[in-house]
Image (tube, rainbow, N blue to C red; front, side):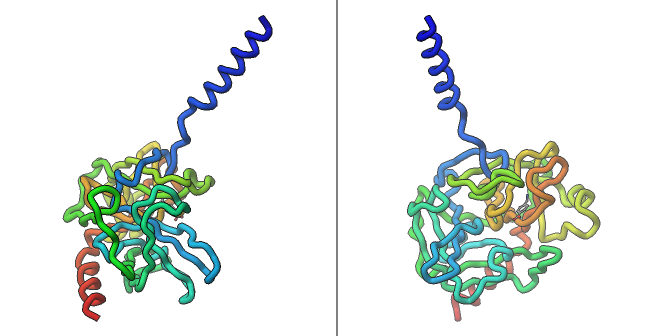
Length: 262
Ligand code: 4AZ
């Protein structure tokens, strides 16, 4: 009888351990396969010749040779440090996916460290990405501001909580667009510029966080935002603030022509 009870208890413990769903990631998100976000890429940096490349930021594939990320991601990089883009990968530090070195990067000249305005940069790859219809694809930039309340998806390998840690597998979360006027009321007059867009849930719980920076916020399959800043991560009443990419479309296309002609 006692033996049966022990076996029952053991099986119950085993069942509970194995059947517990994998902890949600980003903050309040879920693990997803890269084929759900084939435009997503990781920006990895190495700080010495024998150092490994380490994930730093997210990025979006705009063409086979050009990616869009946040200006923050390229700040304080020593000229000797090397940047690698990894596309088509599911793991944060594994060897899966395609790895291509960055040949040149361009930070928006209006990027302001204090106000985080114009938080955008371009990465030009040494070789073209092998685009396909499965897990390495380009994304177009949205041509208008999504309506408040519209669902938007943020993805990345960033932290799973404000005081949490990085995640090994790619994850995403669905948040809602918050209009700029409401967002400005939350963060203070003048804090939310026309180059920013906010998204989150009133009750918090879902958000991008550290090391999701530069990664895409997508509405109806178009790129709307880049993870940029916010008060903490996923706090109640504080949406995440994103670089509003459509306001930089002209700058992006102009820079690409300029660099590709040079
Ligand atoms: C960060 O530290 C950071 N919740 C990124 C995104 C957000 C907050 C902080 C938005 O890179």
